[in-house]
Length: 265
Ligand code: UGY
Ligand code: MN
Image (cartoon, rainbow, N blue to C red):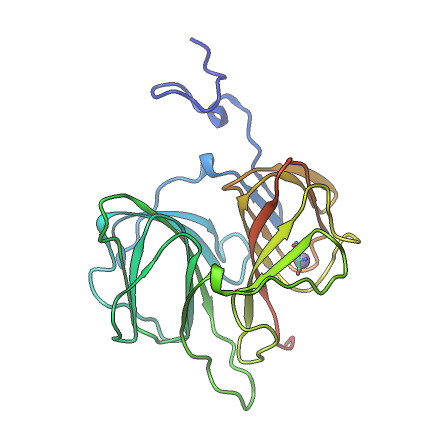
């Protein structure tokens, strides 16, 4: 039996188990290929596998998961948490979400929801197929003199493509209102045409959670390049040197969390 084949057939040993692993955990970044991320469960989600990508245990000041919600699964009752914001982005399938006691709304792939702290929500899979949702959880840092933002339920198709860099081949979709100081984080879809990278290696105070949605490339973290494919996740701590170089024939796109708009202690 050749147990080095990838993807492994049922019953074969997966690649990580024979010593090959693209995953790297360092003090200020982590590269997380999906095959090593085991199953967790959380009481607020029924019939749901939770794949934890990052959290405070890794060094991040936020948490990110993929929720794999089986048909009939999701929040059994409305759920909210004091002080905590939630963001959901549908990766595949159709979920239904209700916010603050409002009507249920369908969200398909590319749909997203932002929930300010203490906002009750239900998130359910009422379809006959499994759904995958990228979820983010972050404690809200209030802004002096500013109100807490309102909830948002929308779809990436309703968000304009921007490019403030002047570089051909870059594209940005700011899923949360850009420059609105009430928000303490951004969720940005970052698009790259083949061969287009950043103008310089970035080294900045903001943290990132990066989920690869489309395409492939090489990602510089610290001093090392990592091959990145769809469904890979990266946590970048503050001041982690970073650069992306797409290597595929088609567009590359990732969803990027970034903490912004708040002063340092
Ligand atoms: O906006 C950013 O910080 C972005 N350019 N970083 C990244 O994609 N790693
Ligand atoms: Mn960055």
